[in-house]
Amino acid sequence: MKVAREVQDRLHADVCAGDPTAWSRVFTTLLDPLVDWLGFRWADHRNSERLHDFAVDSIMSYLDAPARYNPTRSSLLSYLCMDVVPTACCPTMEGCNVPLSHETALH
Image (cartoon, rainbow, N blue to C red):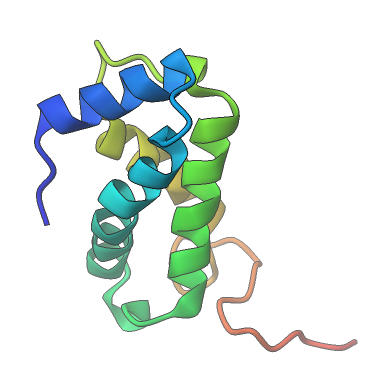
């Protein structure tokens, strides 16, 4: 799902302006494309609830500090994708030791 750059720029401007509907619109506009990108990046986990959680965390991180995003360097969706990559790194993905399953190993 493609989101036009103009739409992403407007969302960012609205978040920075304190528009009370902006947070909701960021989620409804960008969450699915971000989850789709994660599913493409890590196809073995395409339907994983964990990928959805990573996407939500990335959006929340942006909304908590929107000034960190520089719209002259990338689209908002690209920024979110790059923000989520280190968070999502797992043994079956990028070599971290965070398990992708919801089960926790007990030692």
